[in-house]
Image (cartoon, rainbow, N blue to C red; front, side, top):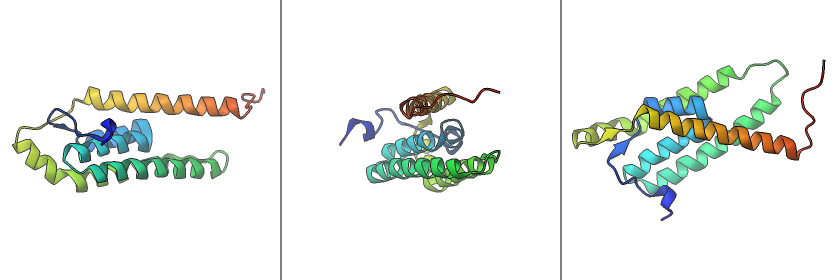
Length: 144
């Protein structure tokens, strides 16, 4: 089993709210990563891999939709929908398991940990976008 998908060594989990905030800050990849870590921690390796794959596909779909939006259109309703989607998924998938594990002494990761991962994912995505723009020959914003 790849090290990236193995269960964490501590008895910790991410809360549905942490997953939601990760999806807001770092997009589907951050929310999906935290959700996949919960699946792995709770012993569902297949679901962990599937969550990462679906999150990557969702990101690709959102990039396409965002590219097709008319100039001046806002993507805020789409972003809110994605955040609510991750919130719903996390509650359905993890609330029962978190209650059982919490009774056994498991604790949530700190908010600093969850937000830190989200910000790293966001920075990595900005870096990839910047590199892609440079590789495509982008000349910058037009001058006024």
